[in-house]
Image (tube, rainbow, N blue to C red; front, top):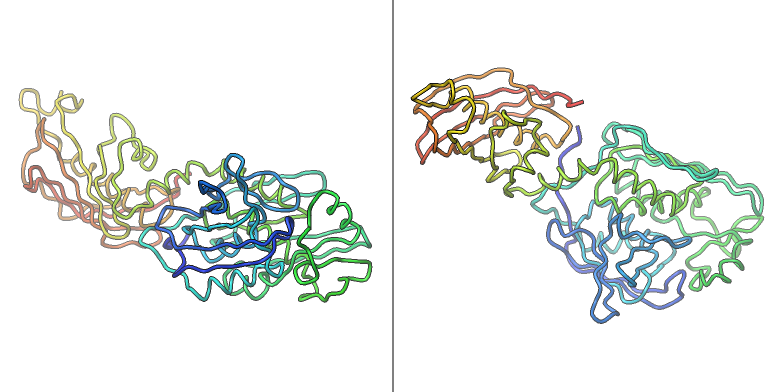
Length: 437
């Protein structure tokens, strides 16, 4: 089970200036706080009108040696270092105003972005954050490169193997469980690098125009040229930095172990697309459950509860608040099949179905509170069951579920039902929480 956490934004505006690593152009980014559910959105303020470019899997563009997002003809390049910081700090909502085509390269690492954001602080918001939990192994491969996501016991871990044949064989391996402290100390300072043999080719393609000793390691036969390593394995650490930034487009924290072998931005983006496709339903349910007080219609309810006709007894959820309560309704009509036999000539809704309606609403509340959409809630016991008034066709049953206890495998909910403000049924219901599949 993944621990519940809140969406986050930054505490105040923060701005960065510098030269783009590839364009060589002076530019700036200004980060502004953003409300819950707004996502990470880049805004090209140098264009008129300004163009908004959400950082999503769908907006990823293929460009060599950098991570690019675009809407129409408007692009923003080299976002991976900043994106990695946002990902690790759990910042899901922020507006990034970009003056120019490219995010400034700073010193070629993510350290300045991390420190600048840390100074203004991170603010928790009222809505729950998303977590993509890797449940089955999945990966992508291209020639000798690969990147795979594996289950990993409620943590995010990245392992990377780097290998270059020129100018002489270089092999480095590193593996880290990613949290803010480890990221800042071990990964964020690792800088962009290029092999000396690649420099002329990249320049001929119009890349690396802003590269200099202050922001890029050029690796020759004997190591960095006119520079020194910050870590003996700085190259592989920077590859981990890039990979974390490339996965930011998922819009979620990740609970899983990502294992990469010689992968680059393109293959990393392919893994993000694969994970997005595989867990699309979970993302949709997360989107449904994300609001603390947001109501759910019948289509959204069907994405959460397994019940179907003729046994889905909640028509709408009016309110759902994590760890507290939910309110729903059931419209009682003469067309219900059970009225044919209960009772002919004097139709009454069976009390056991009133309890079932409460239990279904309670299931949605438990799901919201346990932070795991791949669970089901089975009834263990019912206590203090009382029926106070008959429910007949034409009534609208207002259901309430109040969470009393929640543990790893069990939950207890107080359920109530009323019609026109008058109580008709109540019960204390205990559930066992089990895997759905």
